[in-house]
Length: 342
Ligand code: FE2
Image (tube, rainbow, N blue to C red; front, side):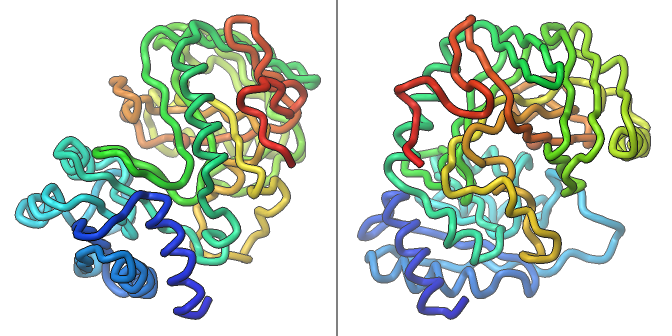
């Protein structure tokens, strides 16, 4: 995408995120990555009268792989202090789940993660309706005590919801201390530590992340008191089991976040391998009416399970009930207050 077009979509983003005259906005990048993102945001922010800064961290040393929650800010407390003192941080590094990001948010800085390819950002721009409907969905989820998910393939699982907060993601953020991720469009929470029971059948066409594959043979998960006790199926079940075994951490068998997607611009069929190198799967997480369950950590929601063994699994054609009230039926949102016209 050329600089002018990229600047236009960043301008839209900054307006949706409430950036105004005189605000201090920092774009953070690392090494040679996403320098064009910084340029586009700097140009866009200037046009709104914001004080724009670009904080560029050195490329990480080749010390053996990438770990969630570990980043170049860890050894730079003075940089963290600077970020605490700005109004908005645009994170083109992926600081998510790090103690540094938490500290920055706690100081009142709003944070937007922007790491997906520009073409995908352009196709999934934030908009007012998505923001409003996701916020309503968040309120409905927050006030519910149980979630039941069923499917024609045999899923029937119940999550007790008495412990964890609800998180909304609608791809922009205009409240102090709030985090969001562009692109996105969904809500989630987590079941009680011992409060998830039943069966989940991941069906053909459902998606495994981070494997970035469409499932072809059903995977049947048995869940008892918040823990996966059995995983069965064909090739994809073997892939999941092998991946999980690689962490040598039984806590990977815990149940992580659960919720549903609400973004009409996100398309189930668009996870084309190689089309957007570097993408991390926000489109499949967001497509309208998907029900996504996840396995592994719940530390993101304040729980004690911080295993690195994590899968996100968006599913089609599911039904989701909150306190027996239908929210999603057969992969379509039926709760009238949160429906978005196609
Ligand atoms: Fe996840």
